[in-house]
Length: 115
Image (cartoon, rainbow, N blue to C red; front, side, top):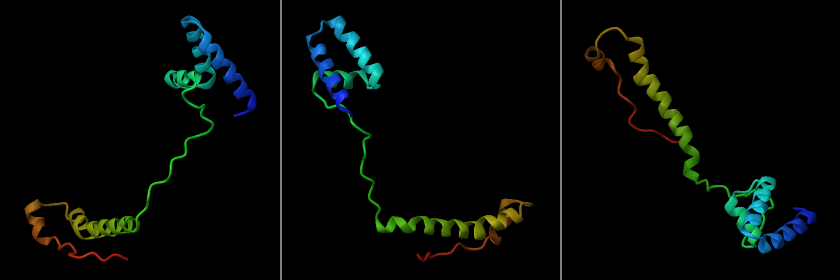
């Protein structure tokens, strides 16, 4: 924020505090249009209860834990095994009833090893 903006804001705050209800509404409307602030935040800034926002809000990144990094590779591995062992025989043998296909399905792998 530049110095001229600070000076203008200080003058606007003084005018806002001394103004009548109608004049405060007009000043607030002007301030909201020029800054893009929400009305509640603009009134707080003009009353001096809050500082004017100088830049974008930067929040810290979320924590990444060690186990979460391998989850996508494990899920990918499980999905490929599921497609190969469960879905593929059903897609090839689409003719016939479900009861006839059940005995032909191979068993799913019982253990998954992480890389």
